Image 1 (cartoon, rainbow, N blue to C red):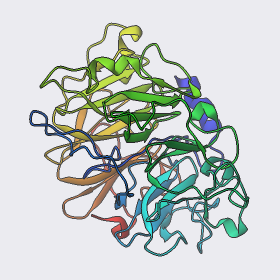
Image 2 (image 1 turned 90 degrees about the vertical axis):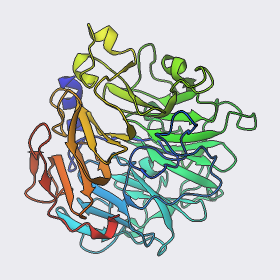
Image 3 (image 1 turned 180 degrees about the horizontal axis):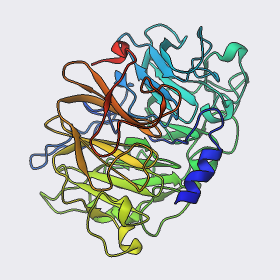
Image 4 (image 1 turned 135 degrees about the vertical axis):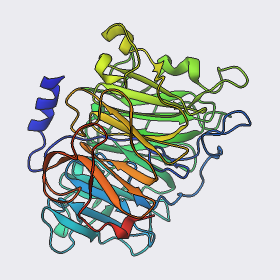
Length: 437
């Protein structure tokens, strides 16, 4: 595991750390999944189920960020803001790029953005018309596939770079990201992806292309309701509760028996016993899935959490006999009432129905989370996971954070191990009022 982490740190370049992605609309807590999740008379932890036809607005800290050194969020005015590292094209050509910067507004159409998601050093934004914008350090990762003047955001096109002649990708209602790729659900139920490489959920050519091989959305039960980008793979939950994925190359978040699917989707068969169409009446079922390096989890409709990972130190403290047992999904006994979750590189934060924030991490987690699931804070109204840091806002409007911070994404001073281990944290010194809830 340490070797994998070292390999990815070598790929950070000026940024530091590596990231990932998946998308669809989320209930109150865009804090961990998009889209509607399930609700019935027995299980009421998640919001009502509804297939999206227009892009829901997800104001606040991004719940779909795999960014390394940068904070990302959406203001109530419909404007995108980045802070921390804003150079390398990350601020979309706005003035004064650099490191340890306060929030900078990205020059997109004023007030038009509904959702925002980030990979390592690239960003995608979804506007009110269902079109997707991309910008950042590596155009091949945000789907624009072309350098632009001053790094300004451009709209994604189908099968061509942003400066090509292909049709503009439209009708998108939810977006998400892995560390180097993006994806979106279209209002007709099809799913589209872009970025590099196929092992990280991207496509083979320029621009955006349809993900081929998913169940036909015209068939009842097959419409996607949740999309979430994990580290190197995307997870997709359908109306009938089936969970699918694509991507999943190096250091994926997949449970036992699954490997890289590249651009050909496969069902997450390890989660079949907990899918909506297969469980008995009154039994809990999967409502959300996410993951980091060598670890993943699924949220159940009754607020319990299934975890899996490459070893006993990656599953939140649930008892497992060996590495093989850790790779099979199992209930984390110390967690209940959970309504949302977000994975960073090697750890996960979760919020419960009382506004408590919980978390656990792998050994040497960059986010400084304990291996056994533990409460981090109470009175939380929103939170976000970067690649190696976690940030949250409390009911008084203050922002707190912990983890990896080489460029000021969680304020100053910069460094690693900010906030200390366990439930330690510190006040964020950057004014994040523009993305407050």
